[in-house]
Length: 245
Image 1 (cartoon, rainbow, N blue to C red):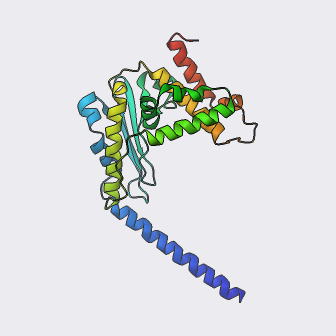
Image 2: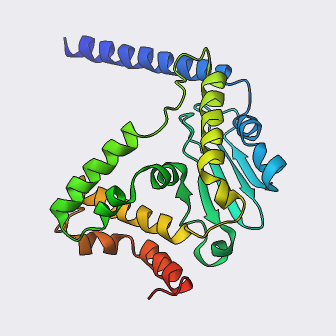
Image 3: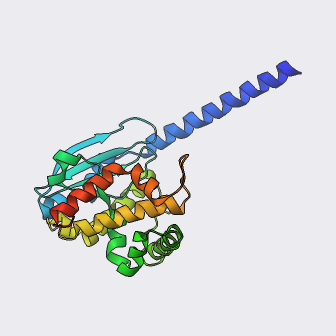
């Protein structure tokens, strides 16, 4: 009886493995256009209209669950567009070129934060700056609700007939939103960069508190801030740059 069950288990595992390999092969076959080509097609406006050039690109060519990335750079800004290996486009990210030498690419701001910063009222956003953990949690809920309700809808991509179309639809939507909400940075206007980065910082800290991420220590604002010391160093740099100490 034991031998029969063992053999049956092995047969089941082998069958599942064959099914998985078949699924992966179908997924690769679906993706006829390279990920890099799809990104360049959607974000070509950066080169045409804003003077960017492709600084690097990479792709998991020929591998299951293709992913890839393209980085664009101008005299002022760097834009990173990444499609994860599960073929999920991430929100584009922007960094200041002047920061790259000292801070590398640690402090790129995502399109999601930029959209929130533009659309959510400042009094709502600033609830995340509270030093009261309970107030932070309530502020976090309000910001999340505002980000979901107040944001313009991204066109649905689930109805697209194949992987190429799904990825292209999402990249096109992100490209449109980047141009709409990120244009000042694309043109080199970073006059509100400090405010945006402060919002990103408060959003990060509040998220850790609201989601009860203890990581083996007491959940206090001070402990959470210490987890992100490099971000805090960058924020202090921006404040000194703006004449704020």
